[in-house]
Length: 249
Length: 242
Image (cartoon, rainbow over all chains, first blue to last red; front, side, top):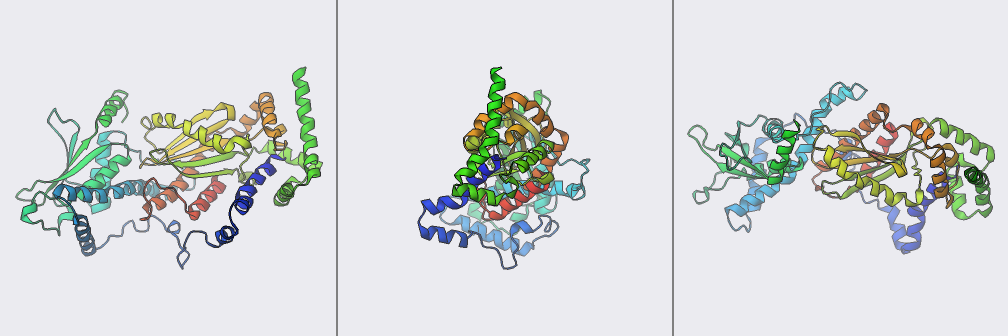
């Protein structure tokens, strides 16, 4: 039984002895004192809080409108044009999409796992989307509900044979645009580019390379109707064909 | 005939080696002995601990989180804690384990990326085996593309677990695995449904903590996870399930 001691010696070398030899004395004395983490006064880190705690909590619409207004103002600083502004809004949304994806899956598994944590494996967690359609349904349904409390209004596929990689998600009255009034000379601008960024983050996270843009398409009934144009990359379309042939759903 | 002689030589080496270690009594060795009282140099206790090891094989684990672009975000090595294990990893080739484990795990990424598009579940189970080191790789894929990879390695067979490190282990490892590798791998059996289930529980618990990390506004995807709280959480999950 000397293999364990062997490893333990390695550990002790790497933990204790090495810094003492290699680094100056001051370093060694400061290391144990500052663990590099500041714990809140109530000793509760983010790891101690349950992720489902805020599951049904909604943030107030007024504070969201204020915050989003500030975000648009922030993005508007030193921009060269509308496209640049929309790109910045998109970039603000992108990391949010990546996060929401993980949270969405965690929450949809944990509903079953709270009961499941004992041992029963009957209810399986939802699958990662492998095909474009399942991914778009995920965005259209669960993601929209997580963000806005309702599903999106339409999901369409481009009818043109030239652009089979284009899909459209329609929101008749996007929450982000409710309190945004766009000046006449910037009529092309749609601040839902932020939401487009979220969609892009979700698609990218799942391994679907995309470009998403938001476009105004007002109707008489819905003056702020917005269409999110989702354009998948060539690699995604190729893989889609392979997956279709092999019967993956 | 020659082989038998070789094994015999190995055994004598095993029995004699702890004594030689003691005789040297370098500061490192004394430190070790004080840390792990179970490994007292007494010949009798050496024998009994070997027996226990035969009954309950202790796995060694190496767990790593890789970003979608294959950057390592988090690494940890630990051993079995269930059934009286002390939770310390004892890889078969301790000299090379540090980089070989990473090497083996990264080489399974190709297989993972194939499995990723045929199996939609997050837990992909056992995906790859590296026979020379008897390393089994289990994978878990988060929806946002981070990969959790767990390498597990069954222990040396009883004869070679009794061996001491410091140069002798690689020799013994090779001699041991050729002679009685089969008995140990059945006992440990890293692909059994029980193991898969335990790993699934472990992965789910790590996933929960990973989501908490990812939801932090100060964390960007692709950043190394440095939080000591995260590390203790993963260690606790390892103790609980593996």
